[in-house]
Image (spheres, each protein chain N blue to C red):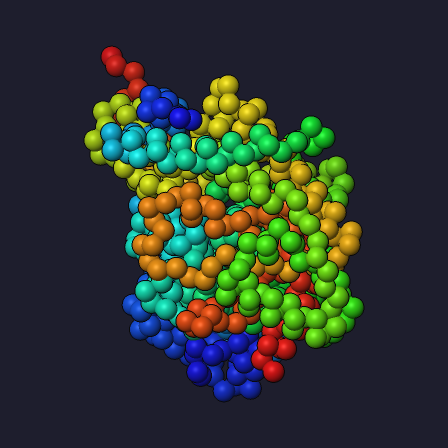
Length: 99
Length: 478
């Protein structure tokens, strides 16, 4: 077995995902099968390969930089418009610290 | 106006000869799309106000004697992972069911500047994760060609509206095949341009090193026109390339004589099927046009799926971290503390496939596993990309299948995620390399299901890809 139910619960906690017991069992089986397939990668020799983080294309080194000029921003109202709860120009969340 | 058979050229001709106005066309296209949509559920919602405003701008330009732009008056559909200011953008997710973006994606902005008329947003797999559009929180899309079958995915809605005739062209997004595979399943043209060719500003991020925006159309020419409009450097996306955008349609002259094509033996050896036969017939057509065909090898093909599903899930787990109940509309109501709110919001909001990928991505990035999975996958990706570099020393373009099989039945594969992942094999390799690739219709199975042929070319050489696809399309019609 590549992954246990206990590990599934640990990973769900890392990902901030609340899972039901049924989901834990389901994902344990699914991930196990997928990780089994992924094990294939051990067969391929990558000793001469540099990790590829991005598709690279020819460009000047500074091509991704732009002039540092202030521009208009969305503004509070637009930025907060989709918030489930907001007030006084802020996103509101449940209490973090108990009194 | 014959809405379902319109092309960009016919719309332009009708407008400039004053046979109809853009406003009339927009109203008629909306009426038709709304009436036909229940057959497929390809549209999630429509944007009549925005469409009529855009159409009126086109009419005013024409009245003033100005050029109304290459997409003047053309009814366009946009996949619902691409942001449209003031028009709901759900990403096929319960989490964003009521999300109304405060800004436009660059691709959306550009297509409206070119005169395009956005009539609605199309259904897709949740956050573009899937190969059948069955992972949408708002229900599946039916394939317009065969209503008991899937349209493919994740851009299934965009492929379906173009096939159904309820839009002339559409925007989709492609991470591992999400434009090419549904295009193949629905019998339309679908283009994944070079990575960096089209700005992703305003595309909801799934796997940032692999995400693309690209066009769907009923002809190669129309897909080339749309790509020409949306392509090019955008300062708001630092990964967009500052490469000149050729006038693609001007270069479609039908002459592909002497072009060297490669057939990857790793793709065809296992394709003893109707799909394989249709691809072989397509290759014959290209030969008859004067192309030289030879067999090539992409030796690391077998490892592409494993590599892709590590990279895309790792990136997805990071990108989807933002849906935590603070900023984006949906928040679980049953939470007293902040950390419960995060967990419950995500647990209640995400569908099964998103959760599965977040879990896999979090696992492969977690302490102790990074080198074995993520770093290894990045190295394998370099090897897969090198395969293509080597192949393009010998040939100008690669011809391949898009999917091992045509559109499958709704529900047929939902219970086997690994089988679904494995079916992405022919599209994923090109995605990992970041090269331009497209699906062009190459015939139907005996059962009447469309099959697409894939054409892949060198980085930023969409021109050769379009020229080949266009010549092929015309030869098929003859």
